[in-house]
Amino acid sequence: MIELLVVRHGESQADLEDRHEGRADFELTPLGERQAGLAAAWIAKRYRPHEIVASPLKRAARTAEAIAQECRLTVAYDAELAEWDNGLLAGMRREEARLRYPLPIGGRQPHDTFAETESEIQFRARAEAFLSALLFAHQNKPDLHRICLVTHGGMINMLFHSLLNLPFRTETSLATGDTGIHLFRIEGPRRRIVFMNAQEHLRG
Image (cartoon, rainbow, N blue to C red):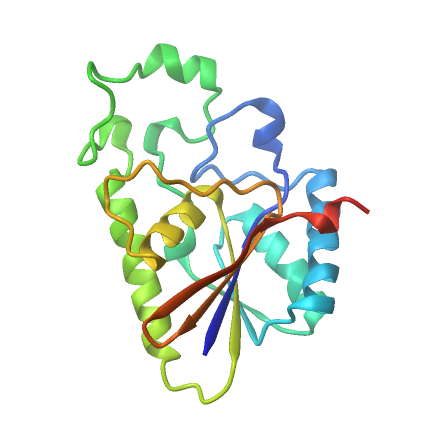
């Protein structure tokens, strides 16, 4: 049986400045650092993982490092866990982006690479490929093996869609707050949601 403990990074500087983040590589804020520490302590006490895999972008990497330190593990970085590639929008203030790159008539289409971005189809395929390779690599584990994935809101949503085999065109989405934590259990063909977007560690 495999468990995926999926964690979003803490608050980043882009959140405070109302910027498109995506592949823009912003640091955590002081609050984000505190959130990461609280999440790490909560995970170590309740759902200690056997391994940690993270996006290499700074906000996710720093969150993963906090978890690794608390759990006495090392972090493996995988670029496939990076956030949606938002091309020319990366780092741009949202108001400026609306003026410089207004959406096409009819809105963004699934195949669209408008403003040099990754299309929705490409993004979903990346999540599918990552998940397939991860589960294949761990398919013969004899006992419970818990993997902590530290990544971004958009990628978490795509992993959720992929894990549950949701149709590509779906109105179902998974919201994740700062250091929100999800736990998915995989046993053969069965997929079980244990909990979603836990943030009780922030209440203390």
